[in-house]
Length: 56
Image 1 (tube, helix red, strand yellow):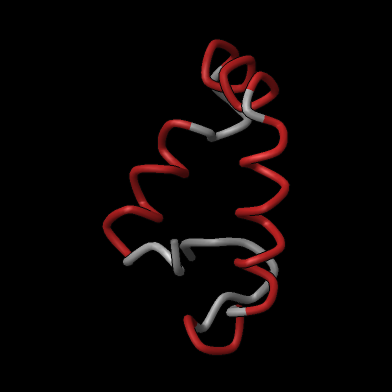
Image 2 (cartoon, rainbow, N blue to C red):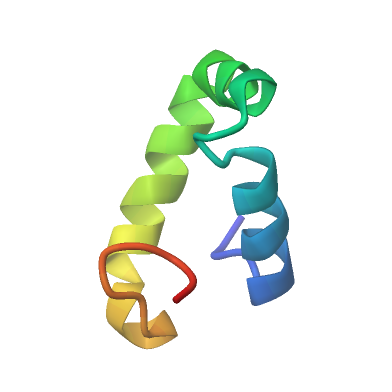
């Protein structure tokens, strides 16, 4: 499917932010998707300027 654009990344992370309990459960239910996303994010870290975590 290719790497998501930044808006999609933002939406994904707002849904999957670990401080939100129900969102965390949703992410756990989508474990494979999350794992794939994190792997892709790791591979593209330099391209998108991420330093370990997204945001500031």
